[in-house]
Image 1 (cartoon, rainbow, N blue to C red):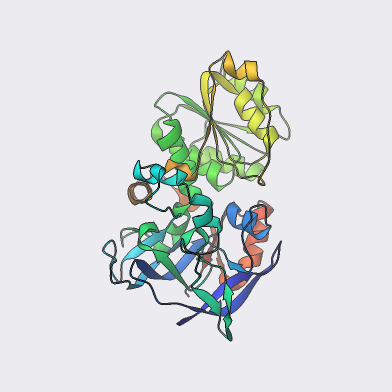
Image 2 (cartoon, rainbow, N blue to C red):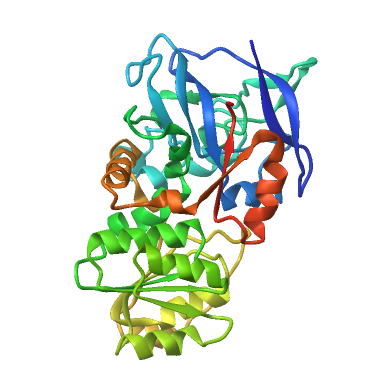
Length: 371
């Protein structure tokens, strides 16, 4: 077993505690990755705070990037030394997976939030007490550590010419926002788009809408600095919803309402605004992650008689082997500057990173695991 350092959550609400752990060698279909950096996502805090049922203690982290250290005998997708991004996990054998709907895998929740492999096993334990297992395989990776053990399925090779420490967030938050726009909503040239929420997902959506050719792009948030950044990233208008009714403001900017909206805050009241801001036959995508069981309301006739559509979206409907390299290429061409969202922290600063993220000080924290 390999000795690693990782951040462990032992109780609801944290904190992250840095521990010495031991990690198994890869099985035949697994890949050992030396983690260079890992993005911190809202979903990490959702799991830490037990808004989703994730077993504790657990190593979180699900936006890892690193270098392949060792591979199992059956692995053909990557080789030792490859630069990789880690993404979500899917089973590969259920009906949704077989038809290519990877993000709607029948076992998605268990594989990404269950804290174990598909067979129920873990690969991590305390270094000084090997009898005490630590839950891992969060999103198939648990990358808040110096090494991660992942399945061949959810490791994505990326070009060595790209800045590896920057790329981890493409595995979840960034691909969620960009994929919602490009893959699901299919925002088209000349169309109008409104992002409700100006965090990493919402701003990634703004950049993607700009790249897709939308001509009216509105960012809605309550933090002035995020709204200012949205304008720099491609938004044509911004709305501070703390000061202005966003539905009225959208309809004032776009006569008749927006073609597409995206709700990323996870707040039911904001979802209602995103629906009400739509034009006839408009589409609202939902990517925000509230507590399990959260309900929302909308005007049924207002949706039915106008032909509006409301779509749930997981991971931007991404096929990551194709979509993540495409985002890297867009970044390298200067068309998707997601580096504008990030701030780096050391592993010892992980609790500060979480606090800064929750306060809106940092849009996308990235935890460096290697000096």
